[in-house]
Figure 1 (cartoon, helix red, strand yellow):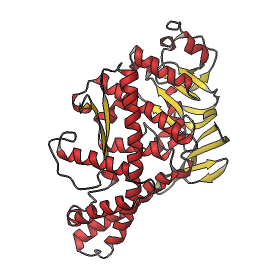
Figure 2 (tube, helix red, strand yellow):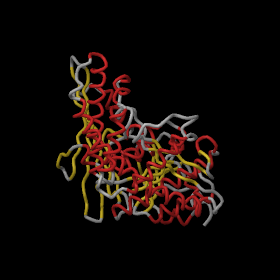
Figure 3 (cartoon, rainbow, N blue to C red):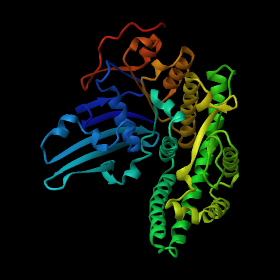
Figure 4 (tube, one colour):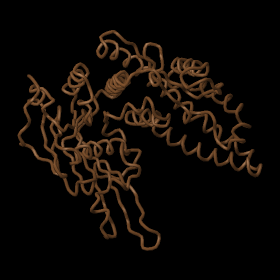
Length: 420
């Protein structure tokens, strides 16, 4: 899988861009704040319908266009994607309409081969794995970010999971609204089982799929980290923490009996027959029923995939609390490389790799491993301020493009490469 052409209109600092890509490694280089990261963001947005940087989709519109008084502002992202099954044309439109009385309205439209589809149905036609320097914050940041990472990974490969997740989030919102109503007025208890049953059915499928993903990622990341990144000196363990049952809180997220219980639950989930969620639904249902009064008092649902989490251990100790920054960076690199292997195993194709200034963050050993992966991928798009940090052999193989002021050009002389 690779992108052969990218077209941007009114996206970030690009008023208009038409860009041809080759398969294999692609290096985007230039000074900071010129538009390199924006190109990667555009590709990732087309793949996932989510931006890794913007708080709202309206921020993605070109700054100059956004300040204009035009009645309608349209941003367009179009990619021609070559896969083992043929070539597809993907398009995402960002439309801002100026309303005289109620302010501006904003909507998004997705098209596949010029036919409009739901945003959800755009996901999966282009699969991408994104490497960012700030990925380390997944280890130390809030659980919501870790759940988001898992959901984006699964949705790119499994449309059924994506539909189940969307359905679950909708039912969760409805159930929480009903819990608030019961808490405030006492009415609605007779309707609660309907939403609870839907929550259990969809949540059980989500639990099962996440458990399978984590089982693969844990095995692959452990091997990569132990054999390739640390020369058999350190072990890591990736632990899935499903909130399928009520657990007693302990001293911290990583160090208490509740965590051990959830890790055991993750193993049990992975052992269940593929596609058969009856045992999971029964266990989940009993736990949710047992929390009914607590949920009414809190006006929120206390158990379910929306409360899941995961964490790393290095040499048996929690990585977030005890690991160095270098160890955390190695763990995230192992996780992303495991993600690539999982996507390839599931789809038969390597995703497009997007690496934003990551190479400069790595030591020589980890840099060499990552560059080897990029050279073996169908397409890897990297950004750098200094192309001289790359070996001559890599630069000879890569398509090199200079980015300056929202313009992309080829043929600009490169700095002296670092070694052969």
